[in-house]
Length: 204
Image 1 (cartoon, one colour):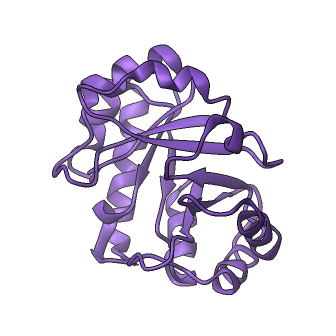
Image 2: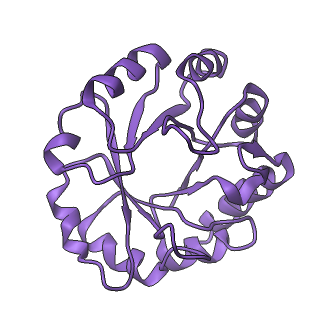
């Protein structure tokens, strides 16, 4: 089973090119103001225009006005929209691009809420207040409601193999786990992360 890899929080062309060369399937660009990995849409557009075709590019938004999301889609050329706030199911269906909806689940969360969201994929993350990784038991249970579950939250080259074996997600999403500082990727860590994913998927 092939596990897709998304490298999120891309802020510069050098990191984007290396992520693609290392084997990433998707790159994430964060358009949430006042966050450490925010990127201006014009900079994102320049990066997206410089990488090879057939690489998915994901714009990350949080509780943003629909008109602004649509404007960024046009300006940047992103191919997916990722929604990281409290967006409603109805809001998620208002876009022509595929939508990834993020859920910060804990062991007490009502996972059936996933049924309400008719989106391209559901991403399970850890609550911002929680250290470590997302709850993998919860992620496994969430797969009952999603046939395209993306696992995020505290993934690193050291634990991604175990995470994939345990959860068997459709894809994994990493940002800080392959950085040397916020917004700057460690190319060796990106290599190791993707190598671990590729080695592990051959055994599933």
